[in-house]
Length: 394
Ligand code: NAD
Ligand code: IPM
Ligand code: MN
Image (cartoon, rainbow, N blue to C red; front, top):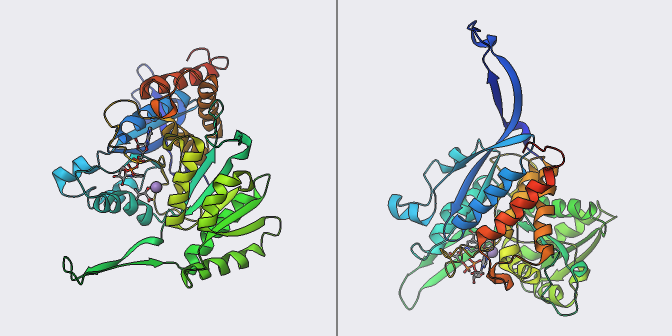
């Protein structure tokens, strides 16, 4: 994964010498520590519960570097006050950050097509974050809900096209409210957009032990967009002879995820297809509260990458403190890996796995009775234990 430490700030610990008033360079720099500037957009509903939990885990996992977290209170409540989901210059405000950690957007007080398009989709499109990476794996101690399948059978990585396709927003309504009303929602697939995401998926497949790529198509019914998709897949495949490729119609692929999940490794799909397949993936993991994701542009930087759980704002459980923070914590590990801190990512994942592996603390979506905070506290304890031998002072 491409890391982007270039924009990281440096926190300079400066100690003044006694009587050392000899201009700005008379101070002794005794310590320089990398600091990642992270924009926090908790958003709505349980986003405001799982992001603080993930931030505490991140803070515990930071060894040898620091964080400068800046909260942005954008979302539906902000919209009710300000008349928009984020300020007009919101993208400019986010641009200098190293990464964005986002909870979830959406509340019944604002229509979903307004709230999501004006905030989350605006950021994904505005920064051209064309890859949405979504791992589907079973954590230790959690039984896969599929009968007869083990954790080893479910190890997929979804590469979702994230900036065009069915989500491009081109269309309109004609004669609204009349019996003759027409609604048109175009999908737009560009050769450039399809090729870059398919090539990225090939690269990810190549780097994995099984080296398999499955693509989701629907070219039996969609003779323009999906036929282009298939052609680009076939052409790109020539450059990856070491990767075995299968092209499935998306309906059959959905069934395959249930009947033969072990046959799937990396899966590449269009924006809408992968949106649907990855909620199915989360169900295969055991809960929507488990699925993590990263929005990236591996080719160029128009803005920071955005890390967010797959799940939404879950209005049915918001405010009760019972949301599962695993997806947000896992997402934070993806963020650390991407920022070039693999050891912190590893510490977070090992601690998360240690807690799930003990099978003691679980939120209600996994059949437990624990709260978001209790789960996060257990992970933080493991993180702290993990660096105790190296740095007993912590
Ligand atoms: P949802 O993901 O919010 O909830 C679906 C179901 O999963 C609910 O029963 C919910 O309680 C459960 N669930 C989700 N996350 C959970 C967690 N961490 N712990 C425990 N249970 C969890 O999907 P929805 O109900 O279709 O959407 C609700 C709102 O969220 C809508 O406004 C929708 O547009 C929005 N949404 C936003 C995002 C995002 O911001 N990335 C993603 C999906 C949906
Ligand atoms: C997701 C969400 C979003 C999407 C919605 C809320 C716009 O479902 O991130 O999976 O479809 O991309
Ligand atoms: Mn979704």
